[in-house]
Amino acid sequence: MKRLFAPGPLAGVGLLLLAGVALILWLAPSDRYIVLPDKARSVAPLVQVKNGRAGRQTDQGEIYFLAVFVRKATLLERLFPWLRDGATLVPASSLRTPGVSDEAQRRIDERDMSQSQSIAAAVALRALGYKVVANNTGAQVTNVITGMPAVGKLKPTDVIVALGGTPVHSPAELRRAMARHQPGDLLRLSVRGSGGLRSVKIRPVADPHDPSRPVIGVFIDQAAQIRLPFRVTIDPGNVVGPSAGLAFALEIMEKLGRDVDRGYRVAATGELELNGEVLPIGAIHQKAIEAEKSHVEILLVPAGDNAAVARRQARKVRVIPVKTFQQALHALATLPPHA
Image 1 (cartoon, rainbow, N blue to C red):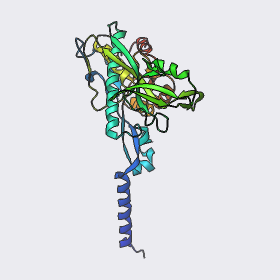
Image 2 (image 1 turned 90 degrees about the vertical axis):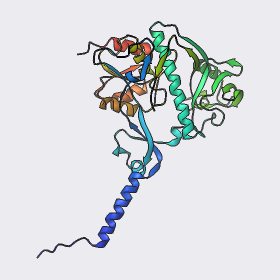
Image 3 (image 1 turned 60 degrees about the vertical axis):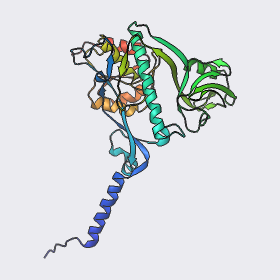
Image 4 (image 1 turned 180 degrees about the vertical axis):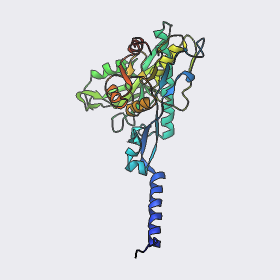
């Protein structure tokens, strides 16, 4: 005769303990951050141009920008990141400058976004033949790399205006001035910051990828005073960072009557320089995944490593690598007519 036994009290306690551990793992934050794909967002509602079109072309085309979602990872996500599609775990140090609080880093990122908007407008209007006044004022520090000589001496928003008495008006000029020195040389930088002009002494180290090249461990961008011929307003909401510059510039041209997308659903990511160069961006893995999930047809990305990663992740999307804004325009203009 078979007997059925009800679970005893110890079994019930065990189940409760397991449930409690699972809840803790699911809710408790870890020491890492998780980067996740967001969703492709239309740029059209975010961009307003004085005397430009309020709407868009009557075709089905659209320009999208790509962002990512970043938050503290739970203990469960820390142990099993593969539970989240496209997730990448990163330390806090990779998201902010050493010694900078989360709130201060967000303000820095917001300034980067504001600068990218001005540059996007300048690049787009110049491509359309408008006169844009842009005075290059130096090489602006956008981030400082942990463990490098610049830590504690330079901070984001500082603008390097001279090296050893040689004026610096752009990132290219700073790189040329740095190339005349060797790792270990004592450099004297003239830096304009919130407290005015100051002198900074710093010894560069060898670039890990090129031992003959001196580096101080900063990311730099163009500092410039930009005056547009008319008002261009971009409202990115809570999105920060400069990687939407390419998408913004394309949409500005749409608003001024240029059929840039030609009926395609086009996602674009890339930081723009004032000279139209498209710079590499971060989190391309997640952005390519969200492009595919959002069913875009064309993905414009910076050439090089960004494009290689995008091709692996956005398999159903046509990935077009670009080095410049003009190249992006040409690539879209030469697409076959949309079905």
